[in-house]
Length: 484
Image 1: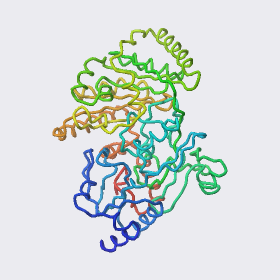
Image 2: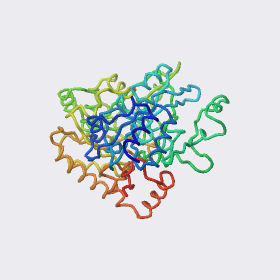
Image 3: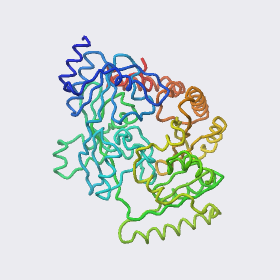
Image 4: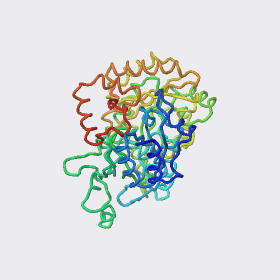
């Protein structure tokens, strides 16, 4: 099929206003803030309806072009998973699909389309005294749906019962152009009929013994395009109290955090080094530097929360339990005079930001993140600090009830230093892999290194799955191990 014919077909599907081949625009979609070099797409289309996605994918299968789905706003894209890695690609921008389809307070669940952002959803939930399970201070323009599909860790480990949380049910159009619903959304009945009977699309398992949402999550858009998801919510606390523990020894804070998690004390809970905590709560580089120098190297943030008439009573008894734990562990010295305001911390934990916090120190960053166990954290920190001598941010987030940990190293740099940072980025990543770090989200440059360390049978199995759901390799070719 000729390019002109493809263009005419795209116009039929989307309308001429929502198809573009403007050179500058196309070039902007060929790069992001990662070190990946992509190809310039042929067209960008903006879709509004599920039926349009189905038609685009069927056209792609018949015409031989690739489809790259995008939902977050530009230009803040980071990991190389939304730029074309092959020629003859079309960008499918889903930012116009931005409806909050349902907020169900009784069942604590929200249904959103891919274009719904944190800046849009958080205020809508707060009006209803509901709380989304957030990652650490997300940017306003980031897609809520994409964040859940990417398995970005949330900051309340006690509410994460499964690695997929807070994702529940999904509606997905596979690479074949076939629409499918997962979990209880699969039926019986349509979504409208289910809601009429009181169902809320809460259970992600199924249909039957098959749970395809686990294939879609983490697939980087290579198996299907998700048109909506349901996400679990919690009720908004009426009182929150921040505890900020500081130490020069990471082991002290890891020990305390593990004990707090064991007894499920505290909601939001994470560890940041002084660089990252300063970036989180301050905007200007000079303010970040000043705060960084006044903090201890390691900082554990833990928030106690209560709701209703007995909220203060709950916080009082939990604070008593926390003090008992500090005494038993002989860690009372961790309670120091606060140098960060409680409201500054709570603002970062309850809202999104228009100025991404990792961009504040030097204007650019690269993040290296992986999953590890409790025992492995100190060794990985030593490896990272030996490779990156300055301006290294560290973020440690307990996940899945504290059974494992998201460990993140943020390399801050001036954009002019990009070439040197690229080399350090890959050297450190490979060294961490070789020492047992589990890169469960292998974006961009990591993919080849990660799959090189897996058995051939693992890649064969993944490629068989790809062949089932996207037999013509039209969806995001080149990501993960789908590079042939």
